[in-house]
Amino acid sequence: MKLYFAPNSRAVRVAWCLEEMGLDYDLHSFTLGHPDMRAQDYREVHPMGRVPALELDDGRVIFESGAIIQYLLTTQDTDLVPDPATEAFTQYLQWFHYAEGMIMPPINTYVVETVLLPPERRTEVNVKRSAKLLNQMLTAVEAHMADRDWLAGPFSAAEFMTGHAVIAASTLGGDFSDKPNLTAYVDRMLARPALQKARSL
Image 1 (cartoon, rainbow, N blue to C red):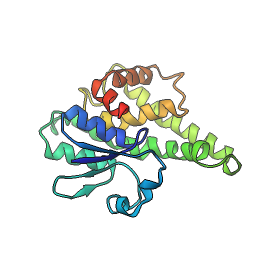
Image 2 (cartoon, rainbow, N blue to C red):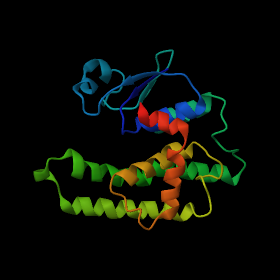
Image 3 (cartoon, one colour):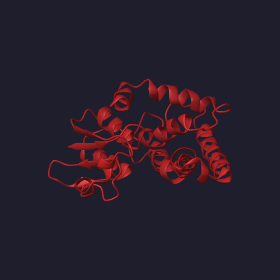
Image 4 (tube, rainbow, N blue to C red):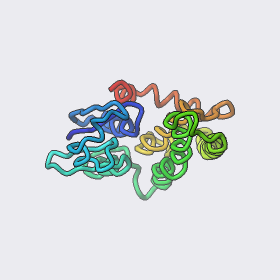
């Protein structure tokens, strides 16, 4: 397998998954925004010129982070998905999908308005609205994480999705001053060797 990757992107969650599962992969790393990501040969891998993308040994390509992780979980022997007959599986599904449905949209807006756009094109109203919405989305995770270490009970692949989104929020303006459960949760994730490896790529 070949992982197309850039630091500080959703590709980190895929690398984290690969490392936790102990799978071998080749790494093709970009710098975010580099012109090589828009080159025609890479657009044949990922039509939007973004990361991550995972090229399988038979040449097939998957280029959506959640789909990549779900593929790996489905095709490999793993204990990262709870038994479907349990309540843990219900929680796992909820929090696996919460990342892209709830947390990442306001993060995306916040990054565009504070990082990607030049100052003269930024809109303070959008910055404040996205920060407020992000805080609301995180508040739900904060409440859920009371008296638990991981989102679905045991450590699971939900951490790669919503856990990674919580880490992103903690570095991009999310208000954690009233979220001790999330602060401790981030610390637990960052202590995992597999995530440390993924973040160092």
